[in-house]
Amino acid sequence: MDSLVKSASTDIRSLTINQEILLFDGVCNLCNGAVQFILDHEKPNSHLTFTSLQSQTGQTLLQKFNLSTQQFDSLVLVVGERFYTESTAALKLARKLKGIWSWLYWLIIIPKPIRDWGYTLIARNRYKWFGQKESCMIPTPELKARFLD
Image 1 (tube, helix red, strand yellow):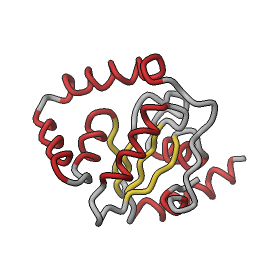
Image 2: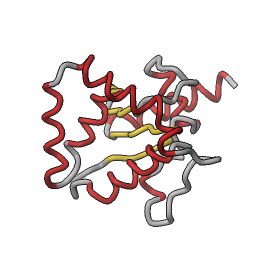
Image 3: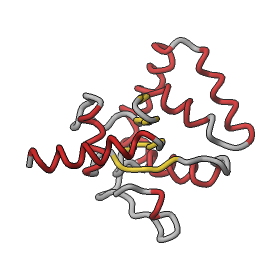
Image 4: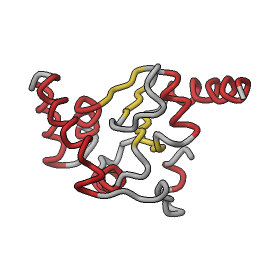
């Protein structure tokens, strides 16, 4: 098992150098809706790939950045060797969207504790308000290349 994680970590290290990866809660309806929204509204030059927090790749990335592999209450945006969580991840994602959606990034001027308070409020209630799936989403054949596993 340890050698499997080491092997996956090596692959992840080379993978993350030139990629931007969004880790999301694969069973959350809100999170799955957000991924679909991003796919529908992203700028043409976006190189974003996706994986669920629950997947092997997601778990390996969480371990790499010393993040919890059990708590799935935040999006994690990996950009090269850096990562962003909570409201910062969401706002950095907004910059990748077309049109007026990219303007949401300017909310970054709000102090992080205030932004994260709002993010946490939604994250804690997302299953109650939006529901959850029994299993992670399966991408369509056209989108499969954008998902890591």
